Length: 310
Image (cartoon, rainbow, N blue to C red; front, side):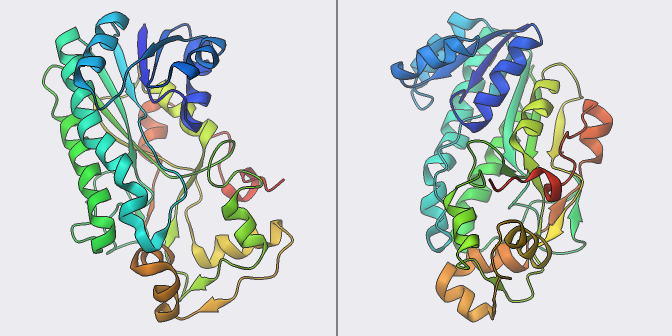
C-alpha cells in the first residue's frame, strides 16, 4: 500500500518508516524541513516537504503521495516542565488540533481509506476508579488547569479521527516512551536527574505509569496499517507500575541512591500541580485489545528488562 507518514523525523518516525518499507509498503514521509529529505530517503521513504499547519501545503503533499493510509505522528514535545505543563505541550496541542484537521481534510479529498493517529494513553485517563484502564474508560473529565489544554487537544484529535466520514479511523494511545531518541534514552536529562537524586517520590508515589519501548510502539503502528477495526487501542507494555515501584527500581539500575520521599505540598512547589498528579494520581492502561485485534506483542513486555540505562 501507499502510506504517508506525517511526523516522520521524530523518535517514532525513525523506528516506523523502516518497518513500513520492510513490510513492502510504498512510504511517503512528510517533513517541514528540506534538510531532512536526505535522511528520510536513506530510511527508504519518498520525502515530501509540507508544514502540517499550512492546509494548502498538506493538501499538495497528500495529492502527490496519493496514499491509501495516512499515519499521523505529528508532535513537538521537547523537555516537559511540569511547572509549566501547558507551555511544554502548546505546540503539540496545535498539531493535534490544526494538523489533524488539515490531514483529515486532505485525506478525504484524496480518497484515503484509513487514518492512524498518535494519541496519549500515559497522562490522560480519568484519575478515579481502578489503577489500570481499558479503551472503554473515559479520559479525564476534570484535568488540573495546566493539563486541560493537552487533554482537550487529545479529545479533539480522537473525535475527529474516529468521526471522519468515509475513513477508517484508528487511534493509538501510546504509553510513556522509552528507548532511542526518547526522553528516557540512555544519557537523557531525565535519567541523569534520577541518577543524581533529583527526582524524588511525591506523596505515596501511587500514580500508575504504563510504559512502552518506542520500537514496540512502531511495530504496533505498522500493524495498524492493515489490521484492527476502527477505534481506540492502548499501546503499552504488560507491566503498569506505580511510581513508588518503578522509580526506585530505575534508580537501582542507574546505581543511584533510593529516591527520597517528599510530601505533596513540597512536590507542588517544585513540580507544580501536574507533577503531583503524575506522581500520585495517574492511571495505567491495558494492552489486551491491541494484542487481540492487532496481533501485536511487545518485544519488551516490561520496562524492568527493556529500559536500558547505558
